[in-house]
Amino acid sequence: MSRKHLKPIPQFRSEADEREFWETHDSTDYLDWSKAEQVRFPNLKLSTQSISIRLPVALLEQIKIEANKRDVPYQSLIKVWLAEKVHHKA
Image (cartoon, rainbow, N blue to C red):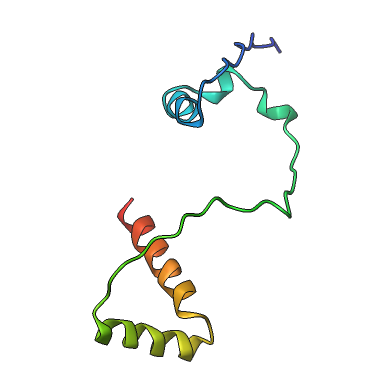
């Protein structure tokens, strides 16, 4: 079986440049995935940013009721619902 010559991974000026690169290039040209190992990052914290949104009081109360039924903080329920909505659109 012949070995594929792998291209060197370029240096990136920013995370955005790297993201754009990998969105437009096939990683198998740069990495031998047959040698990949599964790893865990148990202490990895996702980057987050606080935002402020104004909601109608009635809507917020409905969200709090639903969160209470699920025994979760209402902010967590909002995050889950937003994530689900975004993923269903994709």
